[in-house]
Each structure stands twice: as C-alpha cells, then as structure tokens.
Amino acid sequence: MPDSRTLIVNQRSYRLPTQPTVVVCVDGCEPDYIAQAVAAGVMPWMARTLELGSALIADCVVPSFTNPNNLSIVTGAPPSVHGICGNYLFDVATGTEVMMNDPKWLRAPTILSALSGAGKTCAVITAKDKLRRLLGHGMTGICFSSEKADVATEAENGISGLLDLVGMPVPDVYSAELSAFVFAAGVELMRKRRPDMMYLSTTDYIQHKHAPGTPGANDFYAMMDGYLGQLEAMGCVIALTADHGMNAKTGLDAKPDVIYLQDLLDDWLGAAVARVILPITDPYVVHHGALGSFATVYLPAGVDLPALVARLAARRGVEGVFSREQAAAHFELPADRIGDLVVVSERFTVIGTSASRHDLSALEVPLRSHGGTAEQRVPLILNRRIEGLDHQRRWRNFDAFDLALNHAQ
Image (cartoon, rainbow, N blue to C red; front, side, top):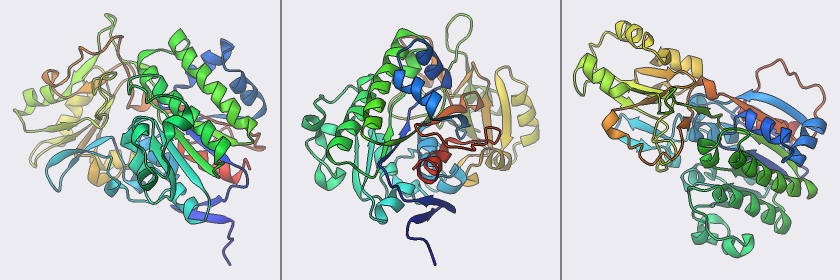
C-alpha cells in the first residue's frame, strides 16, 4: 500500500515536508564566492551553517547553463529525463532556432507540481521571467518573477500587489536588486503566507561582473546571507545550491578569449555547411555577449565526422569534442536536441558563432562566463546537520530536494 506521505517523481521518492522548506538556486555561484565572503566576515549565517549544518560540493549538469540546471533541480533528474538541454536550441522539426522557455519542451513533471498536487502550498520566485513558466508548469500556487513583479496577477501568478508586499520597486534586469527582490519577496511570503515549499532562483548578473572576494561580490553575498538568516529564524529548512559556476574567459590582454566556431567551420567546410548553436543564448546578453563554453553543431550527411572531430580537438582552447551519441551518454543529454557534435572549451575560453554576430561593446569588465565542465562544481548546503552523508560519492545539484525533504526535515 503506497505511503500517502511519499511522492514518486521521475523514479525518485520524496517525503512531504513537515516544516516550511526553501530550496535556493544561486545563479552562477562558484563555490569560491561563498568561501571568500565567509572569510571576509560578511556571511555570518553561512559561517554558522557551514559549521552546524551540512555542506557539500556537487556537480551541476553540463551544459552548465541556467535553464538545464534549474529544471534538473526541480525535477531531480538530468536533461536526458526532462528534456531542457539549453536556454536555446535548433528545432529540427521547424528548422528554426528558438528559446527553450515554453513548457512544451519539458518532458518530465516537476517535484513542485507533484507537491502541489498532494495538497502542499508551493511558491516559486525567479529573477528573470524566462524561467517562470517552466518552473511553474503543472504547479498550483504562487509563481512570479522579479522582472515582471509589477504585472503579476492572481489569475496568472497566484498573487498580485507584489510591490506593496515587498516594499521595493521593480528592479532593473541588469542589477543585483533583481536577485534581492527574489529574497525579499521570499521572506515576506514566508512571513505572511507560510508556504510548505518555496523555490527561489536568482540571476548571475553580479557573478558575470565581479570575481569572488571583490567588494561587489561580497556585498551581494552579504545581502543574501541576511535574507537566509531571516528565513531560518522563521523555522525554514533551507537547501542552497547553484545552477553553475563562473570563470574568467579572457587572455592576458583581458580581452575575451573566443573560438568563433561558425567562422572556423565555414572556412574548413564552406559557408553555411555547418550550423553552430550556442545554448547560452537568451534575451539577456549584455553581461556575457552570448559567449559560453559549450556549443552544438549540426552537419549535413557526407561530412567526415572523425576527421572533423580530430581537427577541432587539436585547436587551442578546445577541451573536448563529442559525437551526438557520446555527448548524450557522457553529459546525460537528450540526443535528439544536441546536434551532430558537441564542443566544450577550456576553462578560460568561450565559443562564439561568427565574430560579426557578437556585439561585445556592452561588456564593461573583462568577460566572465560559463557553460563547460570548468563551471560544473557548485555548493550544496543545508541548514540542518544530516548524519552519515557520504562525502566521497558524486553529489549533484539536483539532489537538493532529496536532501531537503528526505533527510533534513
């Protein structure tokens, strides 16, 4: 007889929360951001949590981008299960390049939808609106973004009057305040509505601009620490992880170190023979110029794949080149959505399409970005001590709900 206190979602078991539970995805949170902020004394809540709670280093999914990892966290599964393999993809059925913001691309239910279906009250707050529909798919409850907080309605978002509730104006999309609004709203919702489960997802604007330990970064983490302390004071179980890390992507001259892959393949194979897709692409390119460390390539029949793989792999800055089948197996990706080849660049290098298609004039500071295996290590921290954790096994950021619901209650 099934246990009414347990849910099965994507072949994993989750117990229903007995305390208000908050899962936080800090966008772009390279573990060193936390280490440097704690060392600087600006994260007292985190310092106590690292001592008294449970702290792990986990792997995010590759490509280490926002959409694949947020959906992995809320489904408890890799992209091979939920289908979201980037922020952007080439839709072979229509021959068009599209954003992966529509829930039609989602192939698996979320833990949040299952919890709301079991009668638990749920709330999702995301910084950018691009994630809102995916994270809230199938879920009954509150779901809104900082970016569009001023137009949230009861019918669409499960809540209205957010600016009055939070006491903040709508932040600029390119600001630390966009994430601060997420935390401030989360605290107010917990104080006034006390949802059983809350998922908070920030933006990595600060991490793209500020390295760990710099004043801009430490100010951001101090802000976050204050709000997390308020949530804990209200009795919340908190699980904190990240969608990906972040690294400098420059040469010695501080200019972006870019492999323009479309230009390269046009030169080798002929113009427009190959199609390069950059899954980092989203509407918010000011801070990264649509440059990341992961690309997929679509090729026509007749191209000598082994020869092309060898030639690409020999290029400086390339970490790995994978066939469709190899990439699907190695990175747990849906094979029908990743092209004929996957190219991953090294830690300090990014991949572009053609030089003429990337406007880098808006980059105010040396480029910092993500997407490859170099940005795979992320924190996985809980404000409850969990005895017997195996620190030698491979933890994933999408173990956050398992730890929060099955071990930290």
